[in-house]
Picture 1 (cartoon, protein in one colour):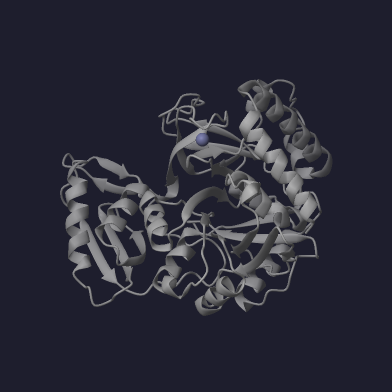
Picture 2 (picture 1 turned 30 degrees about the vertical axis):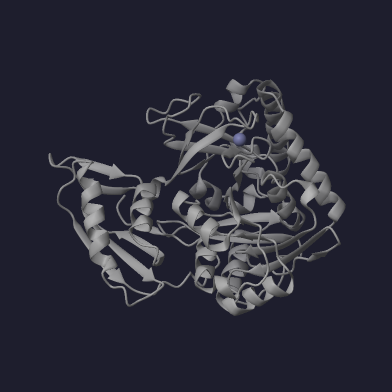
Length: 444
Ligand SMILES: [Zn+2]
């Protein structure tokens, strides 16, 4: 990893978010979209075929390009990537890594391979060039609003991808150490202390795992930066209090770095890294705030190894008005979670109704500070099963408290009787390195 490259990225990214006007963003987007579009046509036989009757001159042309999704991407993986990598070989490699817990470095010494499991069991394979992944912390720093005047930064970056072949950075102004989220907690704590870590970058589910051990941390963590999962407001408050640190969020998925928090703590879309189209329930492009995005179509503007152009994701977000920080990057009001994670109930008139997962998260988290992790499973409409992992297992009354809380909240939605089954059980984070899923719905 080259520190200079990192600092260059940092400066560029800070400049974009701070000074780009709406017009400049549009112009920049169009230029980058054309660049990846042309590259894909030349280097990916999948896109070459897909776009053979298409032109891309105006943005309208772009909006008329076919939309792809995870299934199409996976079905055509070998033809879609621009390095002639064979799907079965990459998948074999990824699964082997997952099972062996043995971190062997990069695939063909060039790529980080990410594996995500979908709700319907279809796995997604994501390639990130080694160089891009190594530069990621500087993207995070730039987008986390870290001023360079607060140097030196001693960063611990908890990674969920397989490779541990990253070169740590050891300079006077920035030291950066990578650790796997699968590492034993004791080891993580001693690394934090030994390295005098002041910035911790980790997924929220991992930060929650650290809470019971917080008193063992002897160094002063100034900032916790979360990524990979939605950071709930309640978690944010709790981390802030428990670690006495500033807590900021990066909204990142296997498909790209979607958004990151500004200095005022609001999430802004990373308009220079991804191009995001949002559509409402009637499939109309959203340009206004406060409309629920039921469909999100993204184009990753920076990953040329596996171009994702007009790729549909099922994340649901709502846009907000312009932020007081001055940036023209669109501000996100709320990440509602994934469309797959909606929970379904019958109201008093026997109509099927959905509840957003973020509401459930809130209801569960506010019930007790003793809940370390949880899982919500739905196999049938009107029935849910919740697993609670408690910090102090002697406090068994939490189950009935939560049952009461959920029923009370559901009444607001005209939902009166449903089956809620609450179990207290230890929840282990998944052995495979993909995202921990709090919601498992088997209703489609
Ligand atoms: Zn802002």
